[in-house]
Image 1: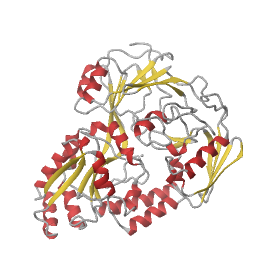
Image 2: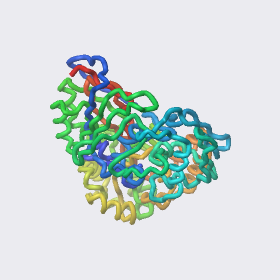
Image 3: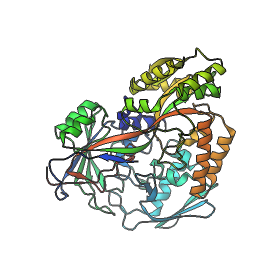
Image 4: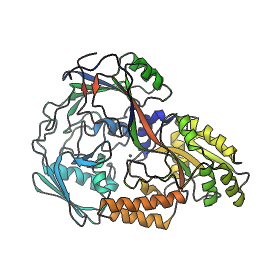
Length: 506
């Protein structure tokens, strides 16, 4: 849910920090020195990442650093999601949802085997999902709260029954909650694996690299490379230097300030990928004077969002709580605009001409955003003090105790609008109409109608100035011309490597 940002560039790193609490693509193509040759199935793909996982147990450990590399590569669920956040089958060749939205029926693909050679059956799915449903320590337990039964009518069919319709349930199955593990397996998931995916884990040199090897017994289309080596490079300058030295074929989370070095080299294509990252300026809606909608609106009017995005170096304007990749997105630019004079008038009406506020921000986000906010707020008579704290302190003070005025973090999880329908969340936003619309959206069986209800709720939250959404984050990835098929969008949450190839030419 949160993510790191020294500037927006730290986007991949941010993803991992974000999930601690859980969970218009464009390209610039410089001239390259040579065209890629034919794919080499014996090649190794070298990928530079920022955040290394603390362990590999994706069932019990949250973090985008895990989901990014393990989902769809090592482990698979009945369904997965595309870069556009659309749901599609994975281990399930087909699935149906009953007209009342209560029964989900999945048919398994033929020939699926775990990495130890054991065939997958519906019993493995039932065992995996019963564990999620009954064990509160397992990721996704809350997503299974409405599940009343998980059955296997035959070895290739799984049925899941809910007590009430839940529009988000199928999407939840695309994450850790939906992954399928071998029934009764005793593998130590912290250091080893026994998935069904197109790659197997070869080795983990902690603090350095993780290596995957192609699974030649994979049930689906074989991976296009023999091995993938993830190199963990937490320093962004060091990452660029590694790319320029030819040590990595792909570098994720490129700092926008450093991107020109890669582009000018002629050795890389830079892609700008979409995300569900919401750079959120949180208002403590339950604390005066931020419980006054005039003050909240004034703060939003005081922010020059376009200038802020330019300072950050990447991202697109976002005027509401739902990003483009999520259901319910609507362009809400009509709700708010940069208008410091109107901001001054609203503050005067609210009796807050000399307002002093504190922004509490995790220290890894750096100073770019705070500096812009200090400058913008000063122009309307608001003095902003910045309290930069370590992340555990932020978790305790802001997230848990709600002791703050303003806060800034990147909320990266998809489909997390429910935070604004939860008055106990750290935003403290309590709007009965928003809560009612969100409840109806979850219970609505028709996806289009559900999205419409979400859009209505999101507009109300924005018009009520429940927070300010400074920008929708983007990721910059540098890709060598010898690499084809590397994903562009949503790579902070997962990197599906099945279709990636590396040319024999260097």
